[in-house]
Amino acid sequence: MKFGDLPKSEREALTAYGYDIAAEMETLNEPAPGDPTLDPRYDPSRELRRLNYRTAKKR
Image (cartoon, rainbow, N blue to C red; front, side, top):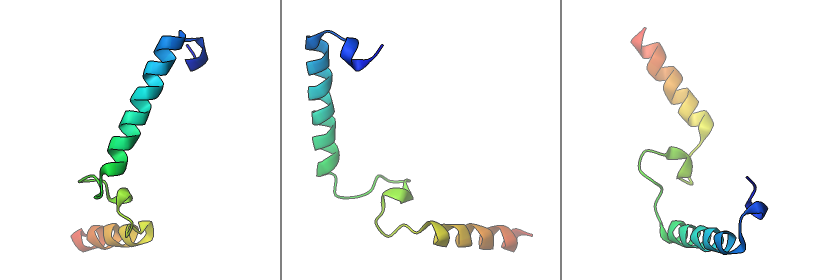
C-alpha cells in the first residue's frame, strides 16, 4: 500500500507523527550512543585503520 492510497485522516496522522519524530530528533545535541557515524568527527578511514591494526595485533 502506498502513502497516497491511505485515507486522508491516516495520511495526516502519519505526517504529524513524522514531524513529531523529526522535531524530537533535532533536539538531540549528541550522537546516539554506539553509533559513531552520527559523530561529526567520525572518519571511516580512521576506523578502518584502527580495525586493521587491532586485527594485525591479534595475529
